[in-house]
Image (tube, rainbow, N blue to C red):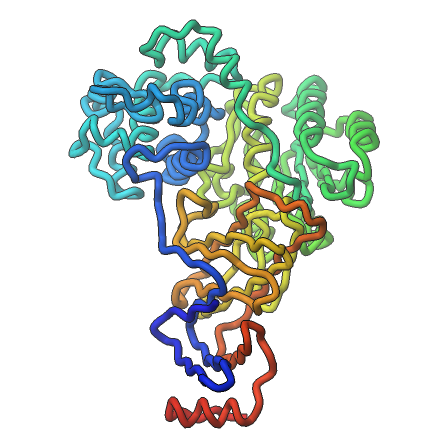
Amino acid sequence: MYAVLGAANIYVTSMKLTTTIAITTAMLLLYGTTTNAQDLTRKYRAVGPEVVEDVVDTVRRSCVLPLDNLLLRRLAYVESRDGTDSHTFRSGFFGGIWQVTQTMYDQTKASSYLQQMRAEILSHLMIEWQSTSWQDLQKPLYSGLAAALYIEDTLRTKPHPVGIAAQQNYWAQVYHQGSLPAESFASLAELMESGCHGQADLDIGFVLDTSSSISHQDFEDAKKFIINTTSFFDIDSGLVRVALITYADVARIRVNWDQSRSQVSLDNMISALNYESGGTETAKALNLASQLFANARRNAVKVLVFITDGKSHDAIDTASAATQLQRSVDGGLLLLSVGVGDQVDPNELHSIASDPACKHTFQVASYDQIDAIREEIQRMTCRAPLAVHVNETVWCQLGQCPPYVVMIPPHTTVMVQASTTCINGVKLYSSSTVPYPGSSHYDSSLILLPHAGFSIFNPPPATSRPAHYYVNTDQTVVPSVMHCNVTLSVFLNEVRVVCIDGGRQRSCTTTDVFNFERATGSHLCP
């Protein structure tokens, strides 16, 4: 079974040979079942963890509630089990997954403090908040936005509560309008699934500022944070490698990729590091990080956590070095910047972080509080995509597939070719706007069948700026067959001739080409 979709396709089928010849300039060639775009975050009474995750990610990317220490995510589960609780959509109540009461909702419209946030919602999400109704909160995105607005209005200049205990206090004293006891928040929040959904290859680096503005105890707290963060990942298997740079007047690689062969040895190396003070030469550290990631694995997800407590000596050099760092890995690096204390420059932190900076920049009051953001760092690292470039092929074993982001150069169109060895097929999701396409939100999806040739995604037309195209694999049901793989290849979108016979791709003959030219009136150059 095949389908050829797209206005630019020309195809012909020979009834005698049951052979299809297709010349493609901008096509989506699918074997199996295809599905049009879907966005459950805007659908009435859509529920489930994937829907909630998409809402939280959308709210963060729009910079409405960029970093809340998982509060919004936990509230969805505690209030309604991500909408699956039978009480969620009870008669006469329209607060949706986040169980926002009408009084809470009315506050989000009346508060002058939220004027800028409402403007951001209109700008990024095309939702005029003042024109919404409480009934609209039955749509997940609207319920999540209402909860985010309410959180911001009730906290205002106060920091977001960190950790389950502090968030439980906020929930019981401010947010929750029901009858559940306060301790219910902790018991329910801890039931939420944690950890990565299958560990992909990962190279994660840390850059740590050890300038004279930090104390020995601060240095110890920072080392403990790195140890606690990396303990979450499977280092012993070799899937995950860790590196560490420290910097003051000079930058030094203190742990290199090939040294982190086990969690125990990594912990020992980090614990044994000596404190070296000096100035804040941030640009030197970023330049050294460029060299470090030049030796990262090509097929590994790449993440860098940059930790500083002060302003660099030269902000212009720092911004330039951060840009060069991204270029050195062709944009395939998730860069998280962490500011500690009140001496950091927020603009500089944003210049270092990946886009959108509001989502990838963290600030904590002191080093003894830095461990509070560990869960956020781990969560973002788990979801970091693997960059795939033109003329590259990547593959993964189902259950260990990362999200993929196809890097499209300016003024260029590409094709993404996919195939699988999984006997039951694999479902793929793709999008040009959603970084983590999945069952609740995607531009297109398909069931990729084994041994039936390949499928081709086509991202949008070329633009004057670099573009991203996202492809994700459904790994909710991992087959029992071992070594079941998915392969993606990226090509420049040039004219390609594909001959398919009996559901299998084969070499085209001169007869095939002749029949094609006669049927279409076109001429193919040899």
